[in-house]
Length: 282
Image (cartoon, rainbow, N blue to C red):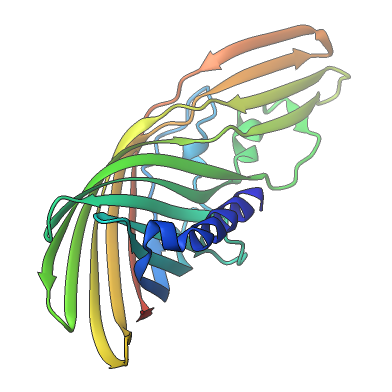
């Protein structure tokens, strides 16, 4: 929520500075989208690989999103694009924010940041299977909410620009990392008193990605200087991602702690999104 507050505060500041920044061509949009996020899975080995448990349900990798967008031009050759993304919990803690410098009427160059929320679920199965001689003290299903932060550069091409129909193509080139998370497991030996504690702390590791986007706008009608229309957006994300971590193992007491950095293989991570909605431009 601190992140959401920060974004809203920045928008308010932009509004207060509107005269100095010469803000114009503002556009608000609302759209509903469907997202597919398949993650490549590998065979289990002696080390827990969190990305093998990517998603809330291994058999279901799609979900619906609500996108709230605000675009505007400012200064002489600049524009901004702010998008807040709501998932099923209706918390606006996903975003895609970018700013562009327009070289001419067709080509621009931009810089941006994106934050996506993903879930890693059911990885307690690994602990139970790899330590068959121990009870898992807390055998409830485990789930961690992980934020995926990306920073990118992007060229922008305005392919079609008519009074009623516009098409824009972007090609994001960036680096992304899952932010730090932790998980703890406690074990007790069957028919014995020995106890084990496994503590996982994930690391930040930025890895490259590409994310081409296409945006289409069709004006339905306009009243005075206000236009209302339909929009269709789509993007395709591809990266090879891993989630490395430091694993701490304590046997019986903390004096016997063993720390080990574990590097896991990179998974092919794909995300495809398409959304449809309306916009109001003034």
